[in-house]
Image (tube, helix red, strand yellow):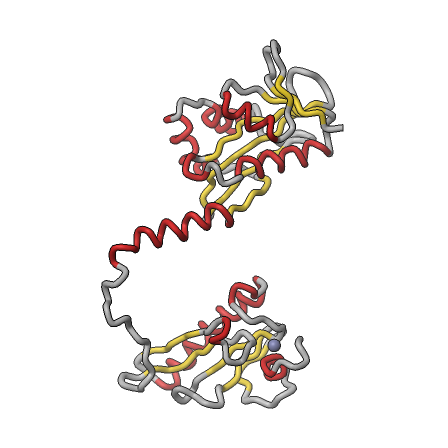
Length: 285
Ligand SMILES: [Zn+2]
């Protein structure tokens, strides 16, 4: 709580308000300057400015409360609709996150100002979409260990890798389903990368089946084409290397793709000549 923030004081009862609902994380009270009667404000008890700063528990509490309170407003006031808004940054007059929930009536004077030229962005929508999606691809991917693989979630990877002439995703799925390789022995892992909840990359770590104990093997790395050159393959391989460091002395791999070979070298792998079962090796200790 910020000591000089009015929002913090309102949310924590240090300034008296007309409280409608309160729990451990949020407070809801009447706006003193209502747009219409029943105008509510929802505030987190902790200090936040913007929606994107809220922790998950607070964000969920606000959404849930706004839904319940909308229903209550509908039941009591029978409005033509309920409007929910939140202003961010310099437009947040309280400088503490708050959501407005209020009943609306036709011709009540509240206005959402439409642009004068309603088609002003028509030719740019595709460009706008690309810009936002590109940002998500570069910045909002999530890499984590897969505990249970759901083969259907790899269908896009399977189709695209087959079109590129690769068989390794097909083998990954088949071996997983058959129980031949589930990446679940000591020191093994399967990492996936998701963007907008789509699986767009995969990479596995196995105990090496050829060179004995204390040696790991990178397997089945694949990143979908449209997501390449954004550093995702590097981050995935780094996740494998970090896991491998806890279990192995050396990390091996085999690739016949020269582009992939150069990529692994930038991560510290050394190229090995004249070995049937490996082309690259990284010493971990
Ligand atoms: Zn505050």
